[in-house]
Image (cartoon, rainbow, N blue to C red; front, side, top):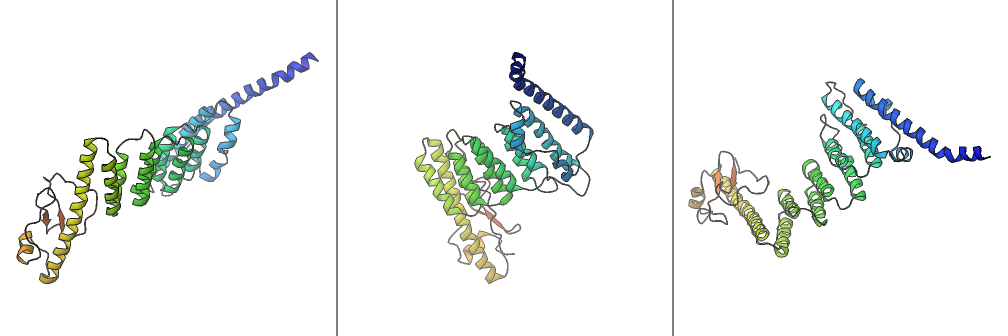
Length: 307
């Protein structure tokens, strides 16, 4: 009877040893397979990928080890597919692999941040799946809400890839609200709104930043940004004057003096720092001078002059 009791006492130990052996075999065979064989088609490959939740239960205390394996596989899928010469590039495995990786190891910072970069890359250099990238980073936020970098990364996705400046600014602001976040995130949100065309919203944000600033440097920077927004408003008025000149003369103005002579301006226009604005009839642009302290203006595409 004692022997039988010992056997039952040993069963959890034997089970653990067996599971460790299986994991070692799985890891070893997977790494060998990745070195020897090319990526197979995604339908067959997916048969070998259990869900992250199932793997998490199977892995016992070795979930971080398995997470590394699936991260390596994600890198192989992304890099191998990107480098392939074939016309048919398939990144379908990338999203599931990253999801499994971060389920097995929710603390895997690189998998969230670099994985999101891989997912957003436009085809054929990536899948162009901004939706999956945002979902991956939101998953990271659920696990680690104090990681302001995840909020910022979502903002960049909306800025660079989706070109939804309102959403981008909202995420930059959310990042700035996280304790310990970098101070410049608030200004990044304001600049994003300026670049996206919502100039008044940007102006409001900069004013709030100025009012709540705890240093002279921040107040000086907020003042400079507000002055840049004023310059953009003035450039809009100068472009309107140039268009009126075009309607009368059927050509763009060659200089400010022509607009002054036509009584469309009272004098050579100066920016808020008292430097003359620059009119370039060849390139069809009006901007602040390069020697102005306002140069360069926020990344806004200025409307061209009539040609």
